[in-house]
Image 1 (cartoon, helix red, strand yellow):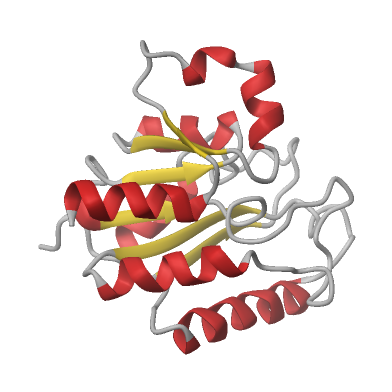
Image 2 (cartoon, rainbow, N blue to C red; image 1 turned 30 degrees about the vertical axis):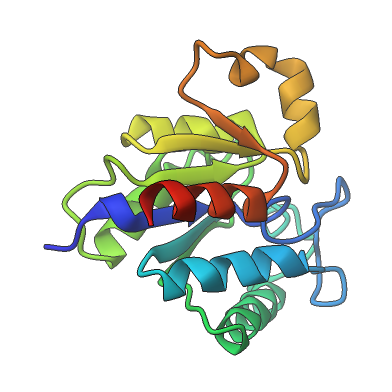
Length: 189
């Protein structure tokens, strides 16, 4: 069975691409961070698996549909592939906050989908990278190492939860995905 210890799970909006308080509703509004695309490719080339776990409540709210989301994810796959990388799986939650699903982060359902899709027994030891507390909580529920990036809503998250940056937490904080990948590849290869 494959090991979760060489798996990095990424939130999408704010980690891979620019986030928006008005939601990222179309391919025109989906603007990737070039350094994030290259960081994903570097991970892949170094033998890591990369997956994405993303809340997409804009679907439930009627701001965009699954076709628009599929276009954004196809563009993400294409850009990562062109940079020499691969995304092993994208799990997304189309539900709103009051829909009562089990997949909307901070619940761990999206990560369970990733675990099952990749044929893993557990996610313990993998890395969960996000820009919000709910990303870290979802990963924590399944034993992932928590990583917060300052991009997207990351600075706001740190302002609301300064304890995340303290020496007494397991959460590692980086300026962006590229900074985390630089550290991870240096530390773990």
